[in-house]
Length: 108
Image (cartoon, rainbow, N blue to C red; front, side, top):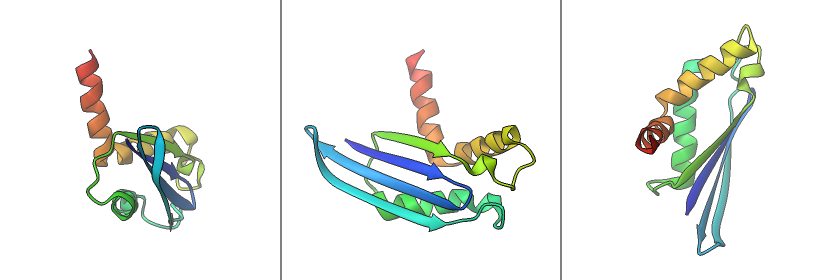
C-alpha cells in the first residue's frame, strides 16, 4: 500500500509517503518546500504539489492520500472561509481530488 500525506501550510508545504507490504513499512520518505503563500503567487501551489509528489513517488501508484492545510489561515486570504474555498479549488485542480471524486461517484 502506498499512501501520500500533505501538509499545505502558510509558509511550508510538506509531503510524506509511506509504502507498506503485508503490514510492514518498506519505505518512508518526506519532502518540504518553502512556499510562503502570502508572498508567492497562490496559483503556483499546484506546481509545488506536483514537484513534491514526483520527488517522493515518481510514477508509483497511490492507494490513498491525506491532506492537512493551514494555508487558508495565512494573510493571503481575506477570511478563513475564502482560504478554504480557494485552497479547495487549487486542490481540485490538482489530480488527487479527481481520483477521489471518481471513487466517490462509484460508491453511490
